[in-house]
Length: 183
Image 1: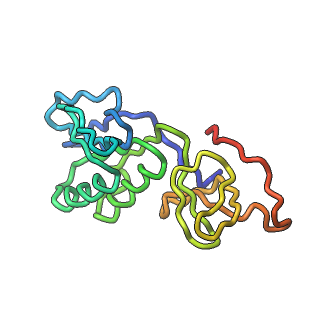
Image 2 (image 1 turned 45 degrees about the vertical axis):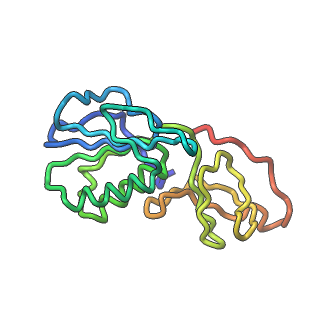
């Protein structure tokens, strides 16, 4: 599928003056030497209510992806040339980071995306424009318009979502068995 993004293995770009790694995974990615002064890591810590964030000396924790993206916007507004941004996590997360960074003037060649973690998808209902998060299967019911959606392999970088189209448009009520995403 031509719209499906391809991801290179994680590697720091040696041409960068500074490196900012942001991840939606619970732990910082392997292979990062945080002892270097020019590498900073931001991590979304998925914690339950009332559970304190664990002390991680080499990573700045955030309570949610939304909080991380808000702080990233503030940081990028003050940043100068030479920063390399690395986003690691779900497809939706890495493209949210990409879209926020490019909207603030970063060139796509300064942004490196790496999909990791569960194969859940963000789905855009093409019928009512609802976004459905963390869908693990290829057929899902839209919570807004209640359409049974087939999750296509077509990915929108702008929406950071896969397209969901009505699976039973020809024969209402005829919905095939859902399958878990394997890749």
